[in-house]
Structures are given as C-alpha cells and as structure tokens.
Amino acid sequence: MKEFLSIAKQLVDLTKNDSFANHFTESAERISKYWMEIMQFAINRKNFDSDVECIKHLLTIKTFENRINELDFEDEDISINKSKNLLFVGPIKVYSVCAHHYAPIIGNVWCGYKPQKIIGLSKLSRIAKLYARQPIVQELYTEGLFDLLKYFTESDRIVVITYMRHLCMESRGINDTNSITTYYKHNLDDAEFQALLSTIKFEKP
Image (cartoon, rainbow, N blue to C red; front, side, top):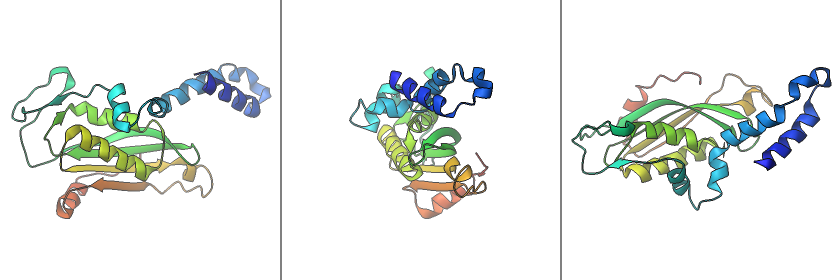
C-alpha cells in the first residue's frame, strides 16, 4: 500500500541515526509491510458495512447444523456431543495497537460458547486474532468479539475474557510495567462464570 510506504519513509527520515545509516536502507519497506499486517482487519473493514461481513470475507466460516451428536474433523472443523457445558478456548495470543497512541498491545484471550451451531474450533482463535488487527480499545474489542461469536455460533451463552499488556502504559507516561488490564463480557449466570474464572491461569502475555 503506497500510502503506508510514504508515511514509513517520512518516519525513517525523521528518526534514523546517520552514524549507522546503512541499517535503515530497507526499513521503510519493512515498516510498511509490518503495518499492513498488523492493520489487516482495519484496512479491509473500510470495504464492508459491518465487522461480520469483513470477517466473512477474510475467513471461511463453516458451520454444522443438526449434527450436534456427531464427531467430524474434516477440514479442521469439529462437532462435539450435545451438552449443557461450554466449549472454552484459551489463552489465544493476540497482537494489536491501542487506538490512542498506536502503541503495541500484547494480550491473551479466552472465549467460549454453548455449542448450538458449531463452528470449526480453530475459527475461534482465527476470529480473535484477526479482529485484533486494528487499532483497538480493549473494552470495545472484547464486546465486539462477543458479538461476532454470538452471530457465528447463534449461541445463547457466550463468554469473552481479555487480559492485555498496554505498552502505552509500560513504555511511556507512567512507565508501569506491572499492570495488566482485564476485561470481560458474558451472559452466563454468576456462579458459572466464577467457576470458569477459577480454571484460568492468568499469566503475563
């Protein structure tokens, strides 16, 4: 994307150290490629009316209807026995940038749903990772991911937990390297959610 390359060239010109200028020869191209990767969802989202339509475009979402009692591992997709319990996946490592400073965010995500309309197990991770490839506010990312999972699974029980390091806090301003931000959204009953929390080992991303 030529716009990214132009901005990257300006950034390199403003910040490079001429005493080892040879190391900056291809930096603008590398920066441009990096931003196109980390902003993949944001770049594509402008072409669609909703997050759902963008995800549909970028990922193939396969579903299994009326097959809850079967097992099927074709093409990485999975169906499981009908149950009142949740299918819960995590920690899923995600990388993003904050919307306020464009500083990196490194996080772990846990998400789950009561199986009704089954999507491929790997799709939970893919959706969480892809949706993070945009400038985010953690609270809005969490709630948006909740809505995406609700749409694709058609489940009445969804949970999303995000546990993130914000480098805008760690590397600038307050320089707080100890704090990690947790946010969650769910529609479980409190006892079920507390029981689920007790199974998670929260470690620094």
